[in-house]
Length: 120
Image (cartoon, rainbow, N blue to C red; front, side, top):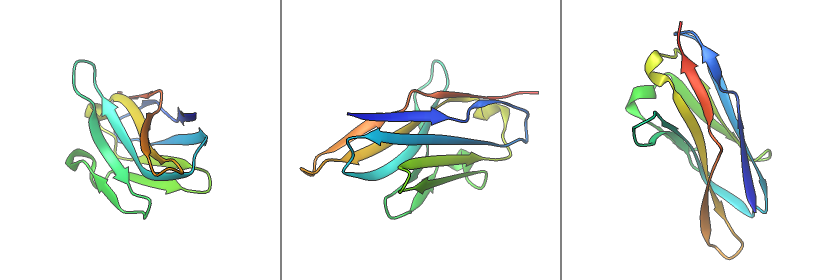
């Protein structure tokens, strides 16, 4: 069983910064991609950023040059540094981790979600 625990959300003023963390624990052989998604009520969950096991990254156009995704493999943790936050970044943010078992099978896990609110 694998658990993902997110932290770091909250209320921030426009132009401010926040850092989200997502730590994985449990029966993990290896971790492939790690990603952050976000969801606004009534809308589909959208990909914000993804980082591969090799460290390659990709971002949604709306967050490029403002958000940075990183990972600490030893800690099995993925981070999302968010800067120059805008009201339209307000959403529930979810981490997504692809775990590979010893058999080679891959499984996707989701964090519980953390609320980010950007407002003055």
